[in-house]
Amino acid sequence: MITRHLSNCSSFRAKAAVYATLSTMRGFADTLVRQRLWKINPLRWMNGPKVTLYSHVPKRIDHAHLEAMWREAAKRHGGYTSHLWVTVPGLL
Image 1 (cartoon, rainbow, N blue to C red):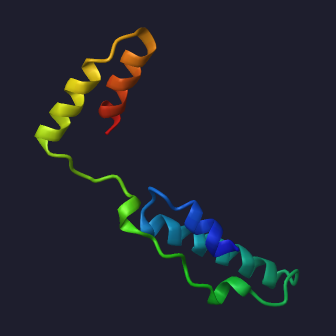
Image 2 (image 1 turned 60 degrees about the vertical axis):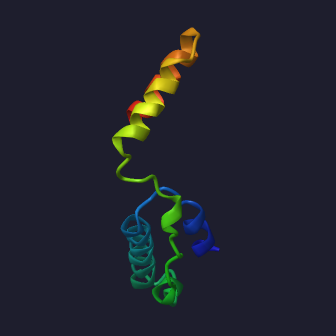
């Protein structure tokens, strides 16, 4: 259940960030064992979830594609939507 939860929350996150979360959870479980609230740490033997690289945003978008996105965003009319569609490529 924990692995499934971590894999669901790992979209658009680096593999290192997902495994750091699992490592923090293992450390917390170790603390519970040391305080004798748990008998064993079940997270010690748990493998991390598989992180697919296809769910990540590309790090580099070439100039032609970026220019086409800006052109399409500038064509939108209306107060709120014009600002929204210009902001999205700006964030990328």
